[in-house]
Image (cartoon, rainbow, N blue to C red; front, side, top):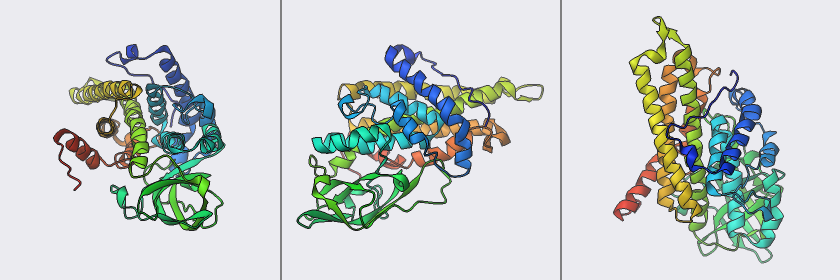
Amino acid sequence: MGADKYQHHDYYLVDDLLTTEQKMIRETVRAFVKEKVSPIIEDYAQRAEFPKHLVKELGALGAFGPTIPTKYGGGGLDEISYGIIMQELERGDAGIRSTASVQGSLVMYPIYTYGSEEQRMKYLPKLATGELFGCFGLTEPDHGSDPASMKTNFKDKGDHYLLNGAKMWISNAPLADIAVVWARNEAGKIQGLIVERGMEGFTTPTTHGKWSLRASCTGELVFDNVKVPKENLLPNVIGIKGPLGCLSTARFGIAWGAIGSALDCYDTALRYSKERIQFGKPIGQFQLQQKKLAEMITEITKAQLLVWRLGVLKNEKRATPAQISMAKRNSVEIALDVARNARQMLGGMGITGEFPVMRHLMNLETVVTYEGTHDIHLLITGHDVTGLDAFK
């Protein structure tokens, strides 16, 4: 892949709605992506290898838990700043954004929100720097869209809990030092536990053969009579609302992140349309190509405004899970459409590693499924507007 020539696209001057600090954060993360991610990501994706050296660099950047209070090592930033960070990271690669999203929204967030003060002080500062790497265990082999039916369970053995079960499609799992795991207690209620690498019976097999998110490490979590200390139970939440609260935070980041993929594909297609000559003129001069570009930037602009408004609502603690679902689904859908049209505009070059489009397109085929599938998010919106539950 050639040099990262990306330039920002802001058709409706959405930057006017951002603070000076938010724009500075965006420029800092964009510079990091251009320097640290873009030059290497194609090679890592082609080899299906995770650039693990970036973990501590992401920590130093402040990409892990940016909204967590500074007392615990976080950035103490607002929600729009968090969204901007996720957008810029995914502009580089969705796998890199996923790494940061999991660490911040699915590991640090539940420990901060549902954990004890002792757990916060023990884990959060090291997670913020990348000294500790974490993952989130919810999805099971037989329970994806229906996590409330999970089978993973733990029993009280007096001085410890005994954990059994398995999770799959877990980002960061093969390298994780800790896992926030959701399991059923003996009363059948869902609770979270912090499981540490090295606990006997806890293994994290790597998932191989992925055509998508190839630069992200994915694996399973297997628990075979794992003894978990009682102080590792998250004390401040019981029930499915615990993990779902984490998912809302992560989905918010994805809603911003997917726009990063769309922007990179649009930017690539726009530049290519001015440079590629066919029939004696740039292909961008042909009506059908202009139609594609006009539709791309229109949908990107609508998505930018949607997530900005969602960020305002989240800062005001008024954003609902259903609103977050709508934004996640919309951003990923438009990003997929942009990537597919950009791929066509680049012709045969669109499938090569010389350009980022096909890598984004393959990544988005995962993003459209994880953290709630496209169809599930449609049903969440349907339930919200009708009051009628299609899940029952």
